[in-house]
Length: 216
Image (cartoon, rainbow, N blue to C red):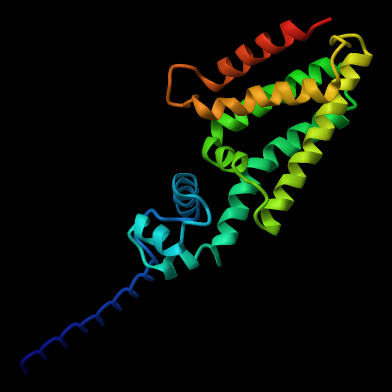
């Protein structure tokens, strides 16, 4: 009797096709941070009121819906930009003003100036936009009020340094505070983080110039 033929091996079932990748909204690379950067640049170049979300979408090469995916409105973009500029300085000033680590007021004030210079170097466009705010909306008025609160805390810190004898006492603390941070703010007009001066070196130069002239 002839041997029976072997049964054919089962054919494996085809692997399931991979699920299609989810479509990204907008062009690759335009995440929330990139959209905000582009918006800040346009607000500075054209003015906030003169800039539309259509302008922003066009500059990014995307549709308006791609912008709305990250920010619900132009005002939300402005709010995020102003927060970027204010939050770091607010935190640095608050830490210096309320420090209980035994540092002198002079040292805490100097640390605040260094932090402000680093903040400006790292977030120059946002700080530039903040300095152009004039209170034309409730959002801008709120940002200006935050700046005023920071100014008050800085003036109080200067007054502490005067009281401890480390700063000269013949100038009003409010004037000293405005002169010091007016100098820091003026850096937006010429400083570039891509230039030959590193942010920390710039901060040290600003502090040496300011405090060696203010020391008692």
